[in-house]
Image (cartoon, rainbow, N blue to C red; front, side, top):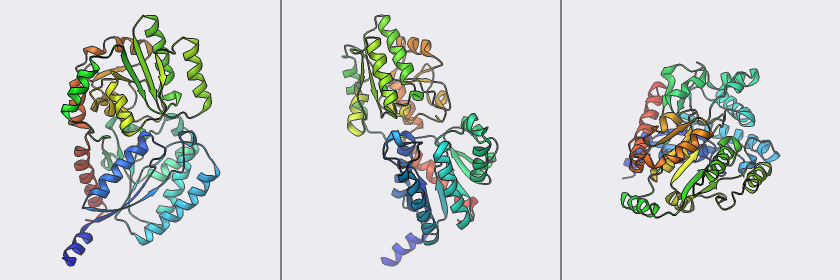
Length: 380
């Protein structure tokens, strides 16, 4: 029996998994955690992971502090140790693509390349913006990190962000996915309960960074109120600063939206799911320059919620415009989309996610992708 176990262990391919992980809770970190769990639960892989981020709250993200600087040295030491001790078959790395995080990850990649000769598999969960690409210092970092490597992107439209650094043959497409946390029977019950709602319930679920679109949704709420539409709008997420928090409450007070708009703080797990169950639509008017996919979109659709979102990054391929929600360009279009949202068959939202964005599908695609990468690295 022991001999058989040892044989199985020898067949496992070793992956060194380097990524931001929760906390804090935001889309990229949560998706990375899900990917890590997929690999750890597989019998085909032996996985060691190193958490790259040292932010404790969303307000810390993208900012430099002493704890983060200490963290760089700690992570570099961990990487060096695992490269020698663990001797991975491949390295999976989820890099930051802007600001302090990019510089931090460049230093980690430099450490890896000094001690490891195979290609790194990057998973891009944020964009390389035109602004950052045109920055000569950042461009040098991108070239130093990505040139000659392999990369996963979330949608084919995001290939262009790489500006030809990596050839098409070394770019793999793997959309985000989510766990199905509710049965068909449960969804039917939720749909019937929603029909009893007295007011129309709008949900914003993201980090409360203004670039994610919360202020545009507040402006939309102002117009809806002026048109005499009965609605509630709930905002969920962490504040990056008191300045943005004050702007939120100031607008509500100035425009007499206290009875319509509520900020519900950070919600995760069952609390978040309870709010998704009671909502009628998710509105996500993001303009965030690093936006790639909008994980929250498929999360909402799994709960049979149609989604209204700005048509940036891969969002136009994540939402079926007119079938699972509406892709909009501005506040005026968002207002019109809310007014006609009942044209959407909410059952189609869930069907779309079950067909394209489930964990089961991702597990199969993810494992196949790793074997493809390992084969190209001549480790199989």
